[in-house]
Length: 71
Image 1: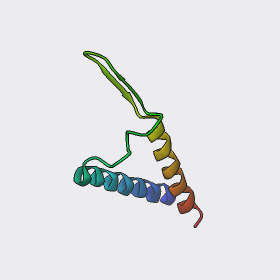
Image 2 (image 1 turned 45 degrees about the vertical axis):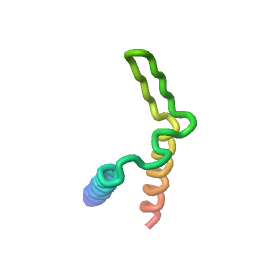
Image 3 (image 1 turned 120 degrees about the horizontal axis):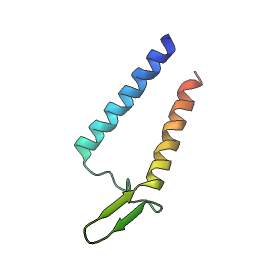
């Protein structure tokens, strides 16, 4: 149970830091504009699905978790 608490605190800190980055830096270059992100624009409709961005963020988070678990 002690390990789960530590993991939740780390995830909370990561989410907080990400939120602060988005607040203070506005738009981060390339995030949301990678090749592979799907954008469909019609007259009264816009569909946006950041597929490549989601995969990139997933890989980065997986690497962080892997490096933290090696201790």
